[in-house]
Length: 453
Image 1 (cartoon, rainbow, N blue to C red):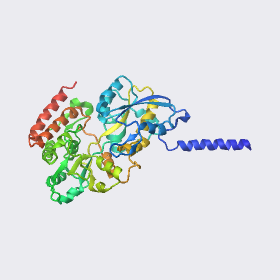
Image 2 (cartoon, rainbow, N blue to C red; image 1 turned 60 degrees about the horizontal axis):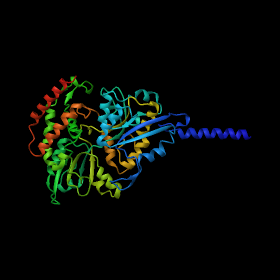
Image 3 (tube, rainbow, N blue to C red; image 1 turned 90 degrees about the vertical axis):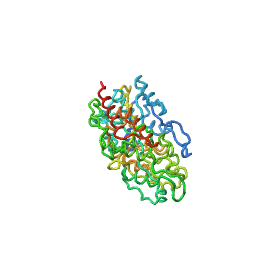
Image 4 (tube, helix red, strand yellow; image 1 turned 30 degrees about the vertical axis):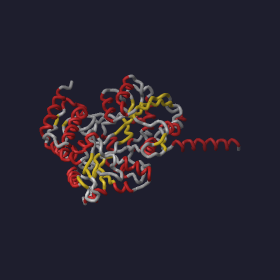
């Protein structure tokens, strides 16, 4: 009888352990599991517990999260975590890759694409193919399938897992529209619709007498996101070819469609607050003191932080999200990935770490405490009131990389800075002729490609 009881108890314990392991993308290490040390370099993450400077709420840092969630699953993996400020992330992480002092990194998408081109990152297709527990379908289609931040320029190799999205949508102030008697924007507002509305709401507010500005976007953006959205809206490809063969790109920067893009920017610039050329002047957008009618490529961070702090829904109701300016409401979307160094010391353990840090549990934690936007199709942890993240996810699911992208080295080094200069002059009423400006840019692009080795 005693033997039967002991046997039954053993079976029960085995089944209990199996049940605990079920439904996890990250199997526990109790069956042997991966072992070793994994060196992880994180750009911008908060490691220690503290107080959120925006909301004043307590925040749980990564260290405590890993202690409670990672270590019980992977007791045989030791993590060495390096936190790196965004300001010098590229330089520091580049040095770590070159000196072979890192295994897994969270970084900017453009940096990751460059490092992959330089042969410093590892493909992960072979790891995905043999890992039955890893399901790529949990990630947004547009991000997983089309982002240069995680995929090779020819689209054939996967080198990263998308971990954090940039929120980029059109947001308008319903109260200002009502003050001016202007019809609200449509759900997929076109550039023409936005510009028409912005022109009507620049000047003295007829109800408050305060100065209002019709529009805002960051006039010195490092990724040219507003211009990229306009190129999609006006079907201005800018070039033909592949980023994997830049020498043979056929540049089309002075096409009639690109002229429409620049003409739109020229008309819109005087409708924005003067500080927009230096990414200033929208400090109150999303809050009760706002004086800007429409913000492009906005993330609603101020509005959601205000709600998280006060639980007051007034500004949630006032500031309305819409899709971006692409034909279907899409635009370029920033994607920050986890990647693995080409010379990772322990590939098996590094893969488990990479999956976990880009997975559901970590994304839930980062949204809850740091308002990071997830890359998942079904993030059931999003606050019901957070309509802005829901809108951002719809935009991201439509994302597709184009030649007008921050991963394009000429776009990053020349096109974007030239366009920012054009915008600055337009704000002062001194913008050059759009076609002449683009003719000069076209020649520079052709010479740049010609001189590539």
